Length: 442
Image (cartoon, rainbow, N blue to C red; front, side, top):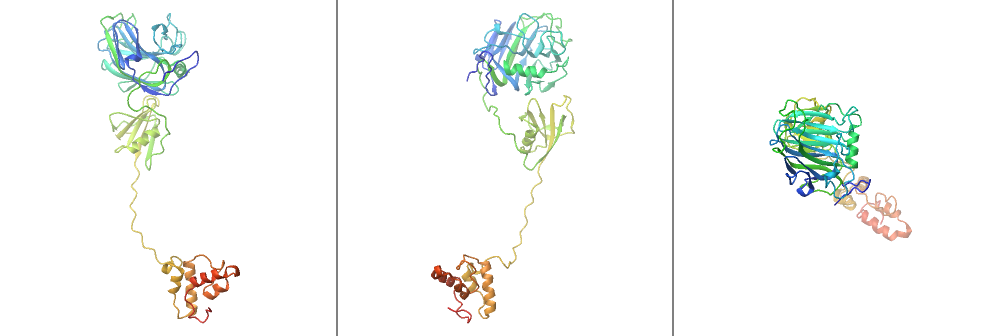
């Protein structure tokens, strides 16, 4: 399926997980850029990009970045831009470039996921306001920086439905942007993703400016660019296509919308919003869950699970075999933790006593006639009482259309003229052997 942005109309496909092949990528500039499946290597000055612009709302981009061969004072990077008017070919030429800086290129929202100073450290920076005369994420950006624990690291950048990003580097959430993003920041990101999409762009360059931390070597910039290289690998994008061709999907299950799970059968969850419960992970990787309730349900289905931690913006559900005391999550309410208590076992039912005799249940002999034959015949009064009891226990259709009485005489006297013959046969069957009693007249 191919999706194109025609004039100002936006058409998008449903969310999927993409693993772009080399054919889904393009060399933006440079003679020594090598495209691979799910990544690229940039030697010297150059850049690579996706041909597709993605709606990343409720989605993510993740990748491995190797800056071990990038020199100090050189800036290997990966970020997104939101150019308009790409057409069916998507981002197929660098003439369509835009960014959040003040330069001769068109301005657009720029989200710098990682700009590194060689292999020492780097910064994540947002640009959502044109120029630099305002508060918030201007051309100067809202930034956070850190040293690399290793020059090879994994990053995952997720966006919730409102456009708010969460950045994780080797599993650690990056927080504390300065200055703080302006009011309406998330809405701008959300709108850009929905209207024009985000092109993944990655380059290597140098200048007199390099990103912090400032204590890294080469902080004066202008490093050895020709002798530097870096690579991006294992690129995965969860989102929908806004502009350009649909790239290669990852193999394996794709996300599909479904109903929210019902309550965990029998078990009970105690939930702590904005708290982390640490403890011991049940598995080495997280499950996917759309809510804390769904995460709890997964815990209830997993053997040995006693609690969970749900990371909101990443939809990660970490099941726990042991939990600690709830503590503040230190990220302003980005996780919810809980404990799960399994239902108490249902006791096995004990033996049930046999039911005692009931005066009005069961039909002795299995039929009214058989029941009456068991009645004592020595005493007409007792016999008639017994017959009445048999009628109660062995009630069947009426011969006369009303009360058939307690004996053959009463039954015959009630037979209607129009069905008399049938009624006589019915009464004889119902009261079969009573001629021995003086009170019975045949």
